[in-house]
Image (tube, rainbow, N blue to C red):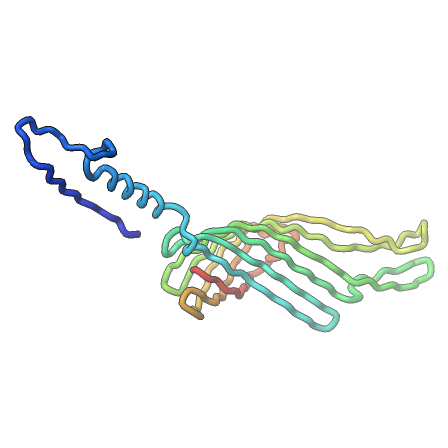
Length: 217
């Protein structure tokens, strides 16, 4: 950010008593200009919309009896030319046909039900450019799962359906590579690891890939 230094020379003449000259505003010459300059500097240090960062990921997949969808927008602010931070939100949906096999052991009848699950997540993240196209990434994410489960009720001789809800935190550390696709936009590919490795974490076991885009960083 440019620093503005103004040196103001005021020649008001010399008098025998060296009396200071004032303007009609009651301030010495240059004081009003200095005050405006201070306000300008203060505004320059405030919010700058051009430093906003937006982006995220979008995915869709289909296979035999499987349907998956996810969307994860993010928004942030470029604190410096190399450092940005912000928040993210995500939604994932997963369905697998005939996943549950439910047996009535009284009659040996077998019933099949689909597995349906959804996940909502909220996160805070920071990203730092190590080189022009290489970056490090850190993120705290909290995930909220909801899915259907089934069991056979022998009292009523029917299948009971009930909702399971689980929440689990994740701390994601990793890095990636960005490829500019315009003056102020880029695509990126990254890998990260959940250092907490909690049960039911969607990122357990290995390094996870992510592909997305950003505008502004």
